[in-house]
Image (tube, rainbow, N blue to C red; front, side, top):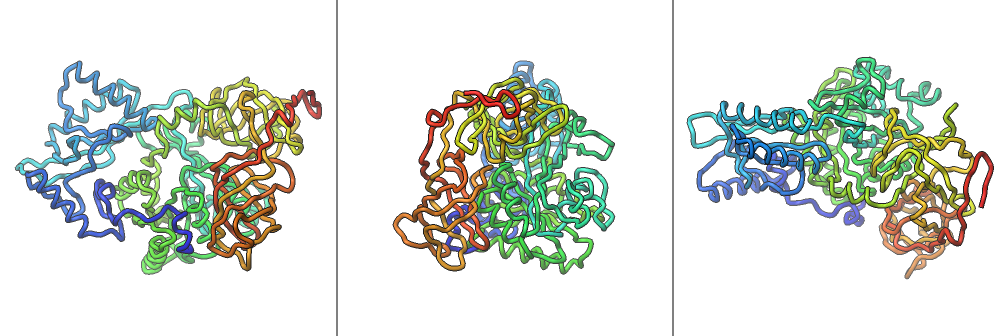
Length: 611
């Protein structure tokens, strides 16, 4: 990526191997080992006990934070009843902060010093932790154990434990992962293997269940957006279709759900891929790179899109069974070189063991500069379990407080897909941006081509192909609208609470950076604008302070939609393209048309409108 736009892509990373990165054990590739040893020696002097650790196992963690879902406990041996109740309350808080997940570090002081426990003390502490989890309706899973070098003849160790709530009433933790990568890199095959539980035969058998169209099956290339689910139960075990389960059974058995958004890799389907990234609000992106071809085709472009939209991404190098070890290493080095360039400023972290996978998952969510890299095969199954461990532990980006704030706002649902289902009627799919949506709720949808909003009623809701009565902010679902006329709907609309008084616009301004243009970008130029689930052609009406723009330059530009008004928000990320022309930015101003100017209409049935 051009170094001139590096400030848009997250700025500079922290000094190599910062304290937070070192704290979970291991130094990231490319980090400064001398910096790590220096911090270690300072810690030893400060503690005054000379606790020496192994080179990759420093004797400290970052101090415990009051917020978040990570809890340090020195030991939990035979607590009194009062102390036990206090510990249970504390666990409820940590689970709430992690939206159903918490990580306990046993044998660690509150200031982060790794003291460690004897075998007997650790066994008693884990027994108490299990009792606490049962009390709050959760299960525990030991993630890893590590010995610490301490001034004692008795071996001492610390244990990292994952506590996860048992699912109830469809309130599982749901993470969305967009799958990017060049055509024929193995994206759909990898998803087929993960979600079906069977390895591929080397000729694409695993991907057949993911395709939606006949031409996709014939060509082996994804052209549309498809969704696949992978569940993990409260004990961290994989829940997928391998035991002839239905989607509903997977949802019922899972405490955590990963929804994969399978996007197209071919360049001619780029607009579909961009729509999937902007509209479906993925939490993370998985960039799949073929080991035998390396960085080719649309790989760089997809990497740039993820960075422009500030979607945290990790990398999977597939098809390692087809290549020699030297070829795989060459592909890894090629990726590391690109990730460290000024336009990226990322710290690659190669995952080779379960311990690496746990470290990668925790650090990936804490620091946007960490980029885990996996090398695996969908045919032999090599290192596939490491990716599953990573996905199992990967925490959500938003905490419970942010989630609560979103739920307190008025209802806003983005319309991304529209279907007609026999005996059900019109169905829309999308994401609830804010608020809470319930069965039977009355909303308004728009804007229509003439800028109006129509009344409608939500008849039923489904999440991950199973019934759901309440939809909360950040969740994706399909809503049945009964006899509502499908021809009145289109992608890019929003369904909002009638109290919101939504504003729409045909003219808006955005601060942009022109990433690439062959000549000069001038007034009158037409581009396809992507803002959230909105995708429409707009014309450049004015470039403030300049007559033209060249590659890498910034400006505030006024756009006008050429077809119909859209619902936009100030501050929304914007991406535009036309041929090889590409640019990014954010909306700074709207020339709003209020609904009072437009009027509000009510749909009574197919084709029937009433003022």
